[in-house]
Length: 311
Length: 313
Ligand SMILES: [Zn+2]
Image (tube, rainbow over all chains, first blue to last red; front, side, top):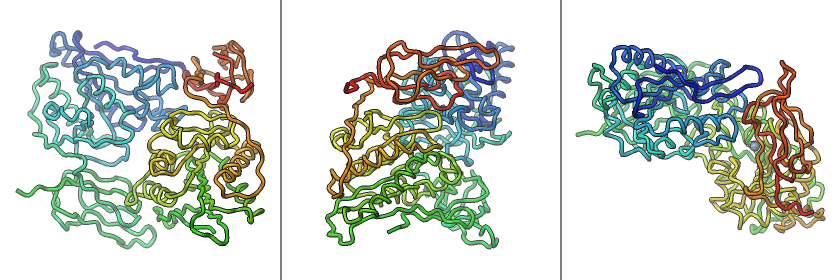
């Protein structure tokens, strides 16, 4: 393993700040993995740390394939994590809205530019991402619209689902979009949690990366086959919204099959404690996403479902 | 007449209400032109609050001179204004990135959608901003380059020093200005001053600009003051000065001064060693229309923007 500094800068009160990369093997730029991009992405940082530990073991056993290089960048803004902020400390900018970046611009823009330059040329780019809305998902691989043709490659991760994303206004400012555009096959891995550690899902996520690296001939590793991924179009997900504001008392979890009419959650009046609304499944399907806040706004998305196709 | 444009229940008990004040002649024919004044989507920007107050006060004083409709929406993000947060509280989302919104969406998307629906059909909208808390701006109109033809004639009579054609976040997709221009409401963004403060002189200047605009639109019969002829800046005329070190910024000039190429703008000093880390010089002759307000600096921080184009001298 080689440790390198990808970007560094001075700060007014905290000394030098450096973004670190960990390199395994050498030769052809095979795969690059980017971890936490926001200060609340604890699960993403944790997964990177577990992956680095695993790759160190594999490297010691000579299990990194000759002439293949893997780069892992665990965190782009751990300085925010250290002060409990989600975005950049000095100006509250989001690095994952700063791509492709400008080496002469503000710090987040400089970081974006430096990262994009350093990760250029890798065959496969993997990002441990978090959803901007918060909440919990079934673990999945997200493909940008530009990378939609990579479905069969994405299935090699053996994650339960592949989400073919529809375009969002801010896409052009994200890492995944710009990475894909400069020729790397980019995959975003969502394991469902962000601000807390979900051990089981972190293990699954790390296993999925190792499986992919094995199948792509980058490492030698004995892994289980994983799931046969189902492909879901983001536009086909059914959003179920709360019709009242109040406490959110959930009755199901993600990745459960539900039948039409089944109770998904109750909404409880914030003062009087009575159930003011009952959310039921509008169709048969699987819960793909659920919000995790203690209370919900009126009309906020509480669940997203994959509709069951009856055969 | 004060109307509630948006009304959404919050998590516990309270109701979020976004209001507007409609000022219109007593007898309307239905063919009057309509101007919308919008502000407060960023909860830390306060100049727009004072500008809205002054416009309403002056119209009421000479109400007989009002020959069209002026809709004033001072506080589009009332929770942010209340909590002194730039973003929409709780969601930590910049409200000026969610337009045109979604009527069936949650609190913020719904609010954005209702605001757009309410403003639809107006002839002109002015979205009044006051920078952020880090940098101070000279009164300027910002335009995206796709609306130069339709909006420039109005931008020029706003009594600002500058019209800057630049894809700022305040005019990009997601912004109120972009969404309204898309549906045919000619919309300009004003930036002036600095967040968390009110520069009263700048505000009065913009209020005069608003009455000049109303006169031009044919909805104000009263006297208006002559307006400044603005400098027109495209990105080729604007020099960005970013810090290359971190520390405390000590300025040598003042905001909105004219500088010569090579003139010292300021220094960045290291507080604990007592040393000068960087001396910053003007890269061109021109007008410092953006200048650092908040003195703590990190590498890359914006120190100044200088307009190096035609100063009308
Ligand atoms: Zn603003």
